[in-house]
Image (cartoon, rainbow, N blue to C red; front, side, top):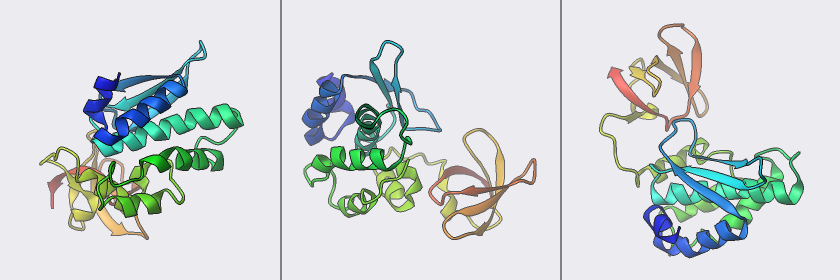
Length: 200
């Protein structure tokens, strides 16, 4: 397991991650990319704990996702199954488990202030924190075909992962209104959503 984790995690996070995995009886599966999620936690019928994390994540997002999912396990075990999945108990657990990793030996210096801000009140997904998400994406293998919504000109048409076409419209407070070309329905997109530009 340690050899596997060394491929996916920052070097100085491997030993501590191994401890968390062993101490909580986690069965970790590294899976192909799923567009809708970075990872998930399930308590299996036999009582074991399975966590899956996407293999395509960069080292820093992989670590955050792994600890995020372990926080679900720990919070459910400590507070019971009736708590909200991303409620106060989970947030406190995630903060506590993440704290030993928030160091310059693990994360690059330019990420640490954003992580500190994010972990004051962690969200259900690091993707909903647009600034942090964009900062983490700089460590991804770049896909030349993809653009971010905020980069596209007003009125441009783009395709999302499932093939649906949208036209970019006005910005609300943080998100962009986009009209689905086929139906005329309005959807809101995060500024850091990755899309394929069709025409500007």
